Each structure stands twice: as C-alpha cells, then as structure tokens.
Length: 203
Image (cartoon, rainbow, N blue to C red):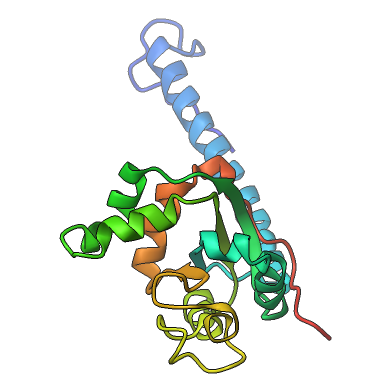
C-alpha cells in the first residue's frame, strides 16, 4: 500500500502537495526496482543451474600449432587428440607471424643466441592459433603435448609422435592459467572467442 505524505501541505487538507507527490514517486520507483530485482534473481538462478547442468567448464588455454605441424600435415591428428580429450575449440585462426609478434610472444628468449633462428622458423609458414576450453584445460593440454624436447617425450604424446627437436616440436601450449589469459588475449579479440555449449564427454 502506498501512503502519500502530506505533512508540509497547507490550505486544502485533501490536496496532495508537490512535496508529497515527489515523495510518492520516489516510493513507487523503489517498489518497482525491488520488484524487478525479485524477478531477476530466479531467472539468474535458473540460468546458473542450466549452465551447471550442461557441464560447462570455464578453464581456457591457448595453443599454437607451429609451421612444422602444418608442413607435416598433422594438424588434423593433433586437433583430433585434443577433442577426444574432451577439450572444446572456442577460438581458432590461421595467421602469418611477424618478427614483432615473435618478439612479444617469445620475449623471454629475445637475448638468447637461438632467438633469430626461432623467429625464422616461426615465420617460415602460417601458424594456427586456438583457444581451448575444458575441465583442467591447461594441464590436460600440456600432458597431451608432452615435454618440450621430442626426444624426451613419451610415445603417444603429440611431441613424442610428431616432433623433431625443441624448436620444431609441433605445438606451443600455455604453461599456466595466467599465461593462457595473456596469450589468448594477444592473439584473439573478445568477439573471436566463443562459449562452449553442453558437455562433449564420450558416453
């Protein structure tokens, strides 16, 4: 029930003064806002429950398939292994790296003697960048990839099966959640990353 305040009214006792009308409008707005919030909460709860029920995993990681992956024709096999591990592709693009991009991505190697060779290799053909999403995505991809040196990587891992050396080792994978966030933002705009819908777990 809405009560109009008339405490400051003068003259006609039945007239609603201007201050009373303003007070009534404020009360009405407050009631409307509270009503709208009450309606939004159940909808939000329903959406959260629906997302949970779909098994949506929010952890994301970044990978880059190097020139040797493309030249050897193993891109499809690598992607197949990632998808079979219940990792969803939510962003993907093919591009040609430049020396400037390499300097940013491999900033920790810039002053090392092998850097120019690394740049030459990484710019020798196009590369494929991907954002993967799934439960424990960062660690899962690194396990699938295997150690950096293919000679030390077990058979059954991506590098162990297809890599040649520490440079031509097929795949770059983020080493932590924080690194993944930096790297995927380096190569993807927000509107180029999509959301995983449903659970793709094999039954």
